[in-house]
Length: 324
Image 1 (cartoon, rainbow, N blue to C red):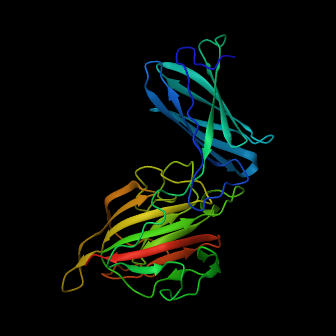
Image 2 (cartoon, rainbow, N blue to C red; image 1 turned 90 degrees about the horizontal axis):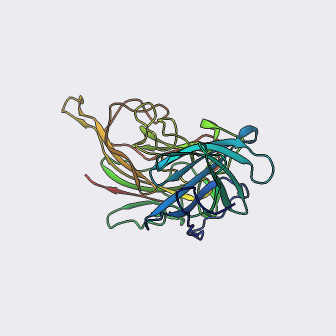
Image 3 (spheres, rainbow, N blue to C red; image 1 turned 180 degrees about the vertical axis):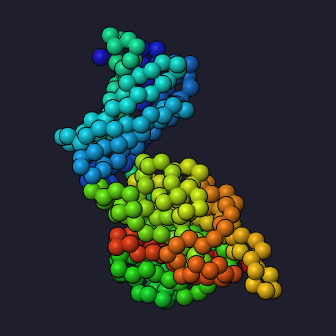
């Protein structure tokens, strides 16, 4: 079996896993990367996602340049097998993928010429934290948590090495804020036997009223009830989640709602948000508070709230810079 597409030669660039405190999972869930070298010299990125789900189901996604396909299969044996179909350079290919030894092994076969040689490539597992993990607090910021103490919080969080823990207490900042720039880092537990809202669930409430979802939504399509979504208001522009057990980041610019002298709202709150350095909301208007916060009534000031859903979600490096 020759290492080539019937019409496109393949060259793999190996990527070494790096990270800040990131430790690979024992399973095969993860992000896998490499490159394709086109015969004309263009280098095309290859990105694979693999997600372990309940009942030994595997789902995934493979992207080659601008072409993307979904993958699905069963976890039988160490790496399981997933199957999908992708259209690349005006040709249709069947894709079979398996994961072993921290590598995603992919086999491409021309579905219109099953007698042609198949192409075999492998992608290396990439295991690293968000590129913005460890972002320092700027001058004028209020540091809510830097690992040195819990004085800024009303409820004493669980004490763990390296972060605040929700999993018994919803955490609320003692201070209230209006217009802010907010940075926060979170780490989600690996829960392959759960799905949807039961998969590492928490939530960040800006001003205690507007929830941006914190969930393990790696490999899922964007949704308002999944990671990065503003519940019942907007889904993220793109899905920018990393796998569980690495440190992910939210960077948010929030403008509080405006009120007249009689307390009537004159302008909606707005929010711009980046998940792991990727823009997911751009000047999004928030017409109302979301459920589960400190109040359904909007206000000019409010606390930061970290929601408990009985999952061992951890937070660190939380700071807020007032803008008003």
